[in-house]
Structure formats: structure tokens, C-alpha cells
Amino acid sequence: MNSIARVRRQGLRPNPGSNLRLPSRERFAWVLGVWVPCLIYATVRYNVFKGVDWTHLPLYIVNKSAALAGVMFIALAYMVGKLFGGVPGSEPVRAKAKFFGLTGFAMISMHVLMAMVLLSPANFANFFQDSGKLTLTGELTFMFGVLAYGCLLFPAITTLPYMYDALGMQRWLNAQHMGYATLALACGHTFAMGYKGWFDVSTWPGSMPPITMIGFLAALAALCVKAVFLGKRRSHR
Ligand code: HEM
Image 1 (tube, rainbow, N blue to C red):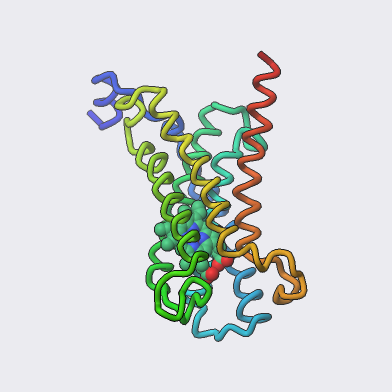
Image 2: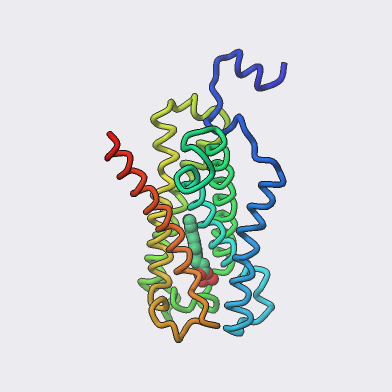
């Protein structure tokens, strides 16, 4: 008896969205379609226009692209079914949301690991005082980042097989909705570290908007879509 048949016999319900798996071509296309433009953007902005040495492409620049692609995937996970992709709550939409969410989680996990390796005054001068302690910008940036990652663990862990059955519908949904807290905290994370450079266009290398600003707007867009969606649902009641 295969594992799905065994679980069905035991009466366990699979998580919503786990009956379907996106075709590998589609998954591949999404990962490349989102991450490669982020990598090109970071490379052109920093290596080409800002003059960052090409030595720093493998980690410093790739970290920026992983952070941006990660936040975009998390935003997509919460916009699918509302803005695009099919009927909200349907199995294909849930399957896409699961794929986007887990891809976002994987990219942000890589971002966190890479950021830890890079963390030094030489790489991030505005996060550190001369004494080596964190500045207020550094404190706020990392507080928001750590909290955002902590909240992201809830939806990620509850996509493990049969968590829906283990937790029950309401607790499972609550855990999935923690992704909105991640998006709000990601806004804080990017705002705290980057807002000073957002408004003076003359300081943008190659006139390209800062990655912090793009990440902030991606997270904010998903939160706004949710707010509009909730507003519409209430007015239909
Ligand atoms: C333990 C948690 C985290 C740590 C330590 C951390 C650390 C950092 C650091 C050091 C930077 C600056 C990178 C640079 O300027 O090159 C950064 C940027 C960024 N982070 Fe995080 N982060 C964390 C969590 C998150 C989470 C959860 C998200 C999104 C869901 C996120 C999204 C971003 C974005 C979009 C940027 C802007 C990229 C850039 O402009 O370089 N981070 N983070």
C-alpha cells in the first residue's frame, strides 16, 4: 500500500493544496523568472553603476538578489487567487500559494545565512558604531528581520504533511496568515535600513531605485491587496 493510500485509510486529510504539484517546468520558470531579473538588477545597480568590485558578486550581490526574490515570492504567495492564478481557495491556487511561499522561505533562509556571513562594519557601515556595537538603524533592521523570519516559520512549518489534520482548520489557517505579519515586518526591515536613500533620486546609482524600496513596495502591495480583498468580502455580506 502506498503512503497516500495508507494515510487515507487512517482518515488523515492532506493539507489544502498538497494534492496538486506544479509541473517542474512551471516551477523552474517561476524561480528563474523572478530570481534572475533580481540578480541582474542587483548586479547592474551595484557592480556596474555603483562600482562595487566584481569579487563581491558571489555573496554580497547574490544576497541582495535572494532577499528581493524571497520577499517577492512571499508577496506572490499571498496575492495568488486575489490578483491572478484562479479562484481563491481552489486547489490550483493553494498549490501555487504553497510553491511561492516555500520558495520565498528557501530564498529568505539563504538571505539570512548569507547576511550572517557578511555581517561586519566593512560591509554594512551604517549598522555599526565605531565601538563595534550596533547603531539604531542596525538594531531596528535586525529586530524587524528576525521577527519577520520568526513569523515566516509558522506558515512554512505548517506546510509539512498532514499539519492541517493535526492542527485543525482554524489553527492551520491562523499559522498560514502569519505570513502577513512577515510582510508587515519586512516593510519595517527594509524601511529601517533604506528609507534615507529613497527620496534623493540623485543618489541612486544609474537612476535605479534602491532594492530596499522595491522589497518594501512588494511586501506593501500584498498587504494592500489583502486589505482590498477583505473590504470587498465585508461589503458583500
Ligand atoms: C534573521 C533575519 C534577517 C537578517 C539578519 C537580515 C539581514 C539583512 C541585511 C544585513 C540586509 C542588508 C543587505 C545589503 O544591504 O546588502 C538585508 C536586506 C534585506 N532583507 Fe533581510 N534579514 C533578515 C530577514 C529578512 C526577511 C524575513 C526578509 C523578507 C521577508 C528580508 C528581506 C530583505 C530585503 C528585501 C532586503 C533588501 C536587500 C538589499 O537592498 O540589499 N530580510 N537583510
